[in-house]
Length: 159
Image (cartoon, rainbow, N blue to C red; front, side):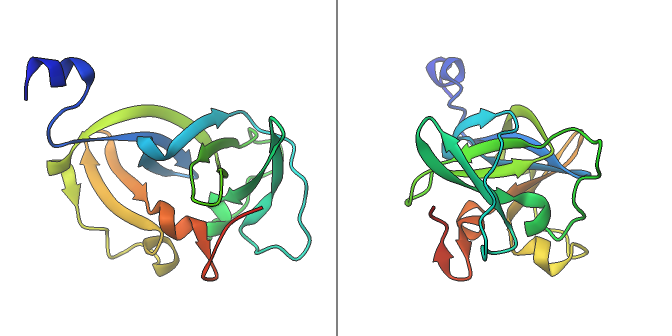
């Protein structure tokens, strides 16, 4: 790796992830897919929407679909009185989509060599939404498969 690559953060064999927590899972999404991070936004409920759709938010005049990661992963909803979830707005072909998560963490540079197979003990409904797993000093980083999250019932999520 050249000094210019290191200074620019363009490490050879390095992937960058925006990390977050959903329940007790430490997860990440490819940084290039992230448009912005937002505090909790009031949502408009959408009747007859897929169960994983939490609602719609207005992002500076643009209507954005909000997908609930807890519902996607088959986890229990947040208990009353717990902290409000946060939004990670990602790019998609149909426009921005927000992913609702419990907590937003850091941006991590992860060496490709840290990649490990997806654990077989994860439930199938969670495995299908994972692109990969990275073994870090602090535990496992579960990387979500963005394309699968955007494709619900065979159709791309669009407002």
